[in-house]
Image 1 (cartoon, each protein chain N blue to C red):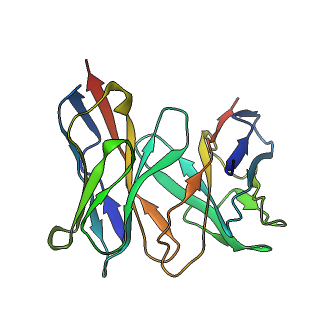
Image 2: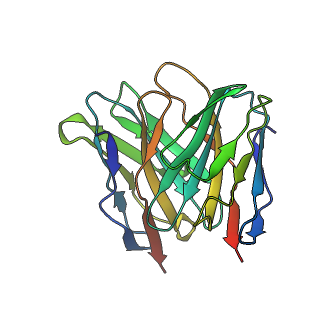
Image 3: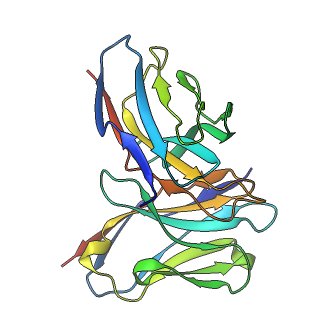
Length: 111
Length: 115
């Protein structure tokens, strides 16, 4: 079955530390992959997307993600986390105008 | 500026009542979507529409209804048949293309509570 998994429900990092959020997908071919961010009580904002070409994609707010076909992964990274990055992050894929979301990873940033 | 507007931001429903959540977009997107969000469950698709006067059920359509009379509008009605409607509801829109490469634009959500 087509699905996307975010193994970490909650992650806490210190401000200034690096961040990596994990995402794995299950699909027969290479889907279109996305990362969204959601602040409390708000909608989702698109951080970045991958659909072909360079496997390292850059997004907004200093985020990047790397597509690894061999591992069926699309992990989100940021070299130095800011307190304003505290939010919930969703990985998603779209195979035919049908977006599927992971359960989300909540990020807490310690001062 | 283009975007999606959801209203109201907060909505309270009494037992047995139908309520309608509004979603309007001015992005000229063909497709519109309704998702339900519960803690720890991500987003689950309720209904979607890729063209005016046509819509399809998603994974959890029972107890909900929609209409798509205009390209800009995709209202969601939560009927009395939905036994557990308390949740955060998100509307999204997107371009219809081969494969879905563009991603969606989301509204800011409506929090529905049963009282």
